[in-house]
Length: 215
Image (cartoon, rainbow, N blue to C red; front, side):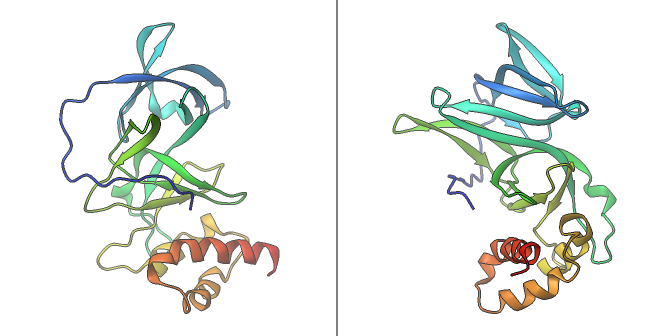
């Protein structure tokens, strides 16, 4: 995964001063791109995205968007967020209906065939040693990452419930995430034997890429 500073906060002030940053939004249906200013912080499940167009504050229906970019450090650093539905898969491949919630997630690792994004409650911009970076305010109970395909708005939550395992949850989503590799979970189980549990997401992605290339 890319080395991005992720900070866990148990408590977060209720009053936050909004600040705007140059950015680009991409519409879902036609991938139309619009340059504007995006107000931070962003609450991940907010139905409206607060922006500024020609200095005027406006709100855009977040459900019409697929991605957005925010430019930090005078435009030298681009951070991308994806809009999608958080989906918890059961072992049999079904989605828990109550988990279909639309959120923003920050891309942390983009591969040719799979995308990893960070889950959170809110995203804000902070500065340290004169360098701006994205601060992720995590939910201390359920933090982690999503997996998705570039052309799909389904974000597969990788954190298992108490009655699940990582293998059963991701195995339930294998037809969506790894359609070219039918035996992905068997290959992953073998690769994971010599790895730490904390590395399991990286191991799964590497296993998938090896399957695609025939290695």
